[in-house]
Image 1: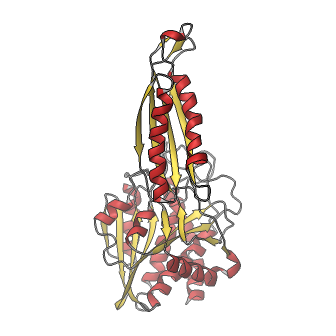
Image 2: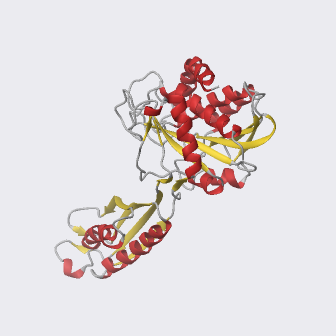
Image 3: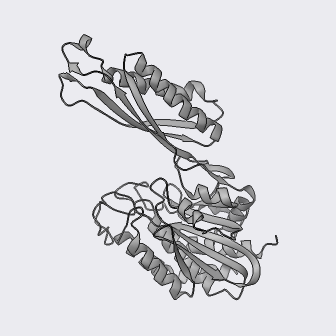
Length: 389
């Protein structure tokens, strides 16, 4: 069956590229994936798969095999980034300020290809396959929660997803048993002082000085409060304050992100960010307002489902194409699906011949990865359904 799926997936290569490039030309950012959703719906219904809308622009397609059996879900995200694309490729974004600089266009083409392959084999397996086309992965709170709330995982026994990964060679696969991607939180700290003339600092409370010390003090949290054998990252992304060289401003605003795998460390980081901000500002006679926002939880793969996925990947691609990889600090709202049902999230390499990383305005993928990823996802769904409970 695997060899048959591989052959059929390879025969779809031109169609997969056509789908992917169409999505690439017409990117739509989070919650606005209306054209994208319409295209996906038309294709799925053309394969004979009933589709319903969830979470705004999200879609759930259900393919029924023979009666009985289990239910497996496969997921692709649909949204583009709010980023102006650069470069002169023939399928450059036609939508100003939006581009598929992360690979979601490829994810949709892969899942549509898997849907077509499996729809043609619905009399050969027992159970059902649920196709999840999810909106708004790039924007917190994400689209996964809304899909779950509207019943997208109802009756689902396992869920699998993949992310095309630029830093891995094309047609390689990697996954981590347990925590694989980090919880991604963000914070804003407004340092409030007292403005004044730059020549008379004694009459002011300088928020720039307080903020400068705060930047340094925040970095001590990971080095001095987190167990060295556990992981956390704190990074400042922006700092804004002041209007001209000779005025001490009234306030300065900093923003940053915190990444963790462990919920206890996550709690600790939130607590210490607030404590360090308040103490650092108070030491300079200033005060602060801290807004700490929790993003997606950590992506935690089920060990048994990960083993299954990697075994199938070895059979589809060859054992040498299955790589040992480390967890990454990026975030993904696929985490919410994994909190509801067991499953696994995979990285699928597409980096051959590519130069620019994810979220770069010149990002692109090696399209040779598409049919191989289709055969993997189709084989994984069938292998899961054929297993005994």
